[in-house]
Image (cartoon, rainbow, N blue to C red; front, top):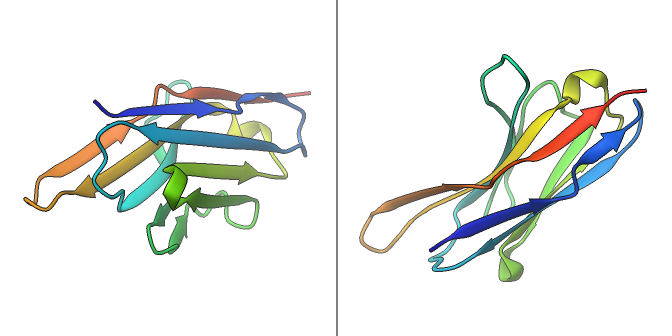
Length: 120
Protein backbone atom coordinates (compact mmCIF):
# COMPACT_ATOMS: atom_id res chain seq x y z
CA UNK A 1 0.00 0.00 0.00
CA UNK A 2 1.39 3.36 -1.04
CA UNK A 3 0.45 6.55 0.76
CA UNK A 4 1.16 10.17 -0.04
CA UNK A 5 0.74 12.59 2.84
CA UNK A 6 0.82 16.32 2.21
CA UNK A 7 1.37 19.09 4.72
CA UNK A 8 2.01 22.82 4.80
CA UNK A 9 -1.16 24.32 3.40
CA UNK A 10 -3.03 27.18 5.05
CA UNK A 11 -4.16 30.76 4.82
CA UNK A 12 -1.67 33.40 3.66
CA UNK A 13 -1.91 37.02 2.60
CA UNK A 14 -1.14 38.07 -0.98
CA UNK A 15 2.59 38.35 -1.46
CA UNK A 16 3.26 35.76 1.22
CA UNK A 17 4.92 32.36 1.06
CA UNK A 18 4.10 28.77 1.91
CA UNK A 19 6.02 25.53 1.65
CA UNK A 20 4.19 22.31 0.90
CA UNK A 21 5.66 18.88 1.66
CA UNK A 22 4.64 15.41 0.51
CA UNK A 23 6.00 12.17 1.95
CA UNK A 24 5.54 8.94 0.00
CA UNK A 25 5.55 5.71 1.97
CA UNK A 26 4.84 2.06 1.31
CA UNK A 27 5.90 -0.38 -1.39
CA UNK A 28 7.83 1.90 -3.68
CA UNK A 29 10.03 0.80 -6.55
CA UNK A 30 11.71 4.02 -7.60
CA UNK A 31 9.68 7.15 -8.08
CA UNK A 32 10.32 8.43 -11.57
CA UNK A 33 8.28 11.61 -11.46
CA UNK A 34 6.85 13.58 -8.56
CA UNK A 35 4.57 16.49 -9.05
CA UNK A 36 2.12 19.00 -7.67
CA UNK A 37 -1.30 19.71 -9.12
CA UNK A 38 -4.06 22.01 -7.96
CA UNK A 39 -7.80 22.34 -8.30
CA UNK A 40 -9.70 25.54 -7.68
CA UNK A 41 -13.47 25.57 -7.07
CA UNK A 42 -15.35 25.01 -10.31
CA UNK A 43 -12.19 24.30 -12.27
CA UNK A 44 -10.38 21.22 -13.48
CA UNK A 45 -7.26 19.92 -11.78
CA UNK A 46 -4.19 21.46 -13.38
CA UNK A 47 -0.47 20.86 -13.38
CA UNK A 48 1.61 23.11 -11.15
CA UNK A 49 5.06 21.53 -11.39
CA UNK A 50 6.84 18.22 -11.84
CA UNK A 51 10.33 16.94 -11.09
CA UNK A 52 12.06 13.79 -12.27
CA UNK A 53 14.36 11.58 -10.22
CA UNK A 54 17.26 13.26 -12.00
CA UNK A 55 16.09 16.72 -11.01
CA UNK A 56 14.58 17.96 -14.28
CA UNK A 57 11.69 20.32 -13.58
CA UNK A 58 8.65 21.56 -15.42
CA UNK A 59 6.36 24.43 -14.35
CA UNK A 60 3.03 25.84 -15.39
CA UNK A 61 3.47 29.27 -16.92
CA UNK A 62 1.32 30.80 -14.20
CA UNK A 63 3.79 29.86 -11.45
CA UNK A 64 7.15 30.19 -13.18
CA UNK A 65 9.50 32.39 -11.23
CA UNK A 66 7.36 32.18 -8.09
CA UNK A 67 7.20 28.46 -7.23
CA UNK A 68 10.06 26.00 -6.84
CA UNK A 69 9.68 22.23 -6.77
CA UNK A 70 12.31 20.01 -5.19
CA UNK A 71 12.67 16.47 -3.91
CA UNK A 72 14.71 14.39 -1.51
CA UNK A 73 15.05 11.00 -3.19
CA UNK A 74 16.30 8.98 -0.18
CA UNK A 75 13.37 10.30 1.85
CA UNK A 76 10.81 9.92 -0.96
CA UNK A 77 9.71 13.45 -0.21
CA UNK A 78 8.90 16.36 -2.45
CA UNK A 79 8.44 20.03 -1.68
CA UNK A 80 6.80 23.03 -3.28
CA UNK A 81 8.09 26.42 -2.20
CA UNK A 82 5.49 29.02 -3.13
CA UNK A 83 6.48 32.69 -3.05
CA UNK A 84 4.71 35.88 -4.11
CA UNK A 85 1.36 34.17 -3.72
CA UNK A 86 -1.68 35.73 -5.37
CA UNK A 87 -5.40 35.08 -4.82
CA UNK A 88 -5.50 33.08 -8.06
CA UNK A 89 -3.24 30.50 -6.40
CA UNK A 90 -6.07 29.56 -4.05
CA UNK A 91 -6.85 25.89 -4.56
CA UNK A 92 -6.52 22.41 -3.14
CA UNK A 93 -3.00 21.22 -3.91
CA UNK A 94 -2.37 17.54 -4.59
CA UNK A 95 0.94 15.74 -4.73
CA UNK A 96 1.48 12.99 -7.25
CA UNK A 97 4.02 10.21 -7.67
CA UNK A 98 4.35 7.85 -10.59
CA UNK A 99 6.75 5.18 -11.77
CA UNK A 100 7.09 1.99 -13.78
CA UNK A 101 8.38 -1.18 -12.14
CA UNK A 102 10.75 -3.78 -13.59
CA UNK A 103 7.77 -5.59 -15.12
CA UNK A 104 6.70 -2.41 -16.93
CA UNK A 105 3.64 -1.98 -14.75
CA UNK A 106 2.69 1.67 -14.26
CA UNK A 107 1.87 3.17 -10.90
CA UNK A 108 0.23 6.53 -10.29
CA UNK A 109 -0.68 7.76 -6.81
CA UNK A 110 -2.24 10.90 -5.38
CA UNK A 111 -2.27 12.56 -2.00
CA UNK A 112 -5.43 13.61 -0.22
CA UNK A 113 -4.90 17.30 -0.95
CA UNK A 114 -4.08 20.33 1.15
CA UNK A 115 -5.93 23.64 1.01
CA UNK A 116 -4.04 26.80 0.13
CA UNK A 117 -5.96 30.05 0.50
CA UNK A 118 -4.48 33.40 -0.49
CA UNK A 119 -6.55 36.24 0.89
CA UNK A 120 -6.22 39.49 2.79
